[in-house]
Length: 507
Image 1 (cartoon, rainbow, N blue to C red):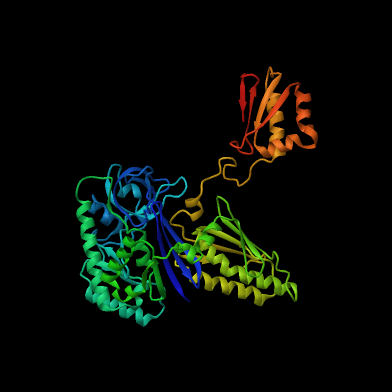
Image 2: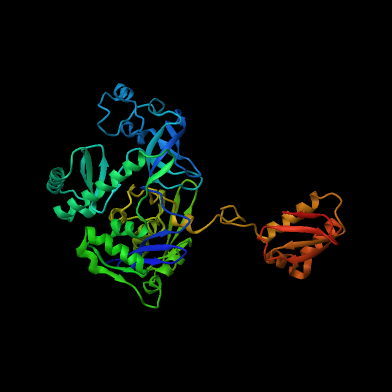
């Protein structure tokens, strides 16, 4: 599979796109007024403790307090940890770190206490960020886990001998009292590359500790890497053949980072200087323009519909223009199979998380059902975000969960429609006319002459068939209406004013 990474920068935003076989599958965006928080470490202050849900709210210096669940509390990292209490509830030495379940949060934390927390989920909708006290620092090949001797290896490899070899290697080169996890991209690197990154991560952790012990909270003590270096760290692997950067400072940043950790990859980085915009050159802009659309067409002529509710995302597969050439079952199977790859691509591209329900077209043959299940399993395995799914139900439904750590791109790129309140619908001209009628009925001492300001679509409806609806309202309410088209109004808004001046009514 051919992979490319594109970096586009402007004064209003920075964007990075990952292409697989010429198709964009992931997009990351950063703006001057919005920086991602996941990975940031804060010295926070406990604002309130809720024993009923075993959680606490932490002030980290942002508008909304962060949410900390008891399962994410590691007493050994508290700035004011009570060693006696920890031993009482866990029976273990407080200097030994690890996830400690079943400790009542109200016995570990107290209001006003200052603790170190790390953001693990971005603020989403009305919710503040979700944090943990189990701190870690991610590098290109390794993840540093302070205050433990734990050594782990990415679950992407099932080779037990390779896992054992890597664990032994890391144990030999790491200092005591600190743990490391080998990332997927680190499965193929040399000992020297591990040594170099261990020194970088330890230095970053030392600076974080020094910052944490100075001053008072709440305050930021460690900021995660910016979009350019972060994408290179997380996505630039041996499989990536080319990296294009269209801004010189970003290009220098990428080259400097790779020089320190993976100098052999520097020759794959290109400073893009052509007149055609980078994202236009690789047709990324066209995909981004379609990003918010509900309907996505498939190569076969079928299409999928993507709808979001409060509880889940529903994806419906339809045959559309695909009428087939042989029999119905084969046509349906080809449409469903075509949908498999596109659905998984859209999940990554739109960064959809939470519960997803896919309604495939009903199939009769068991072997076809199995092929769809296997195809989804294989496609989801390529997704770097944690996913899990069920098999097809008897109604050809499949349930998938995908870890959600940040708002979807739809939420990032758009606002809730003020006219429909997020429903995706507005009142029709017929409904608006009925509402106008009810408003007139509710108004006491109705003036004899009124102006009625409405959206052009509603005005056209009132004037159709020779003003029959306008005349009906005038006769019914014994007044004269002057219709004014106002493009500034939403379709379901309207306002009245007496002629001249007079009282104003608006809805």
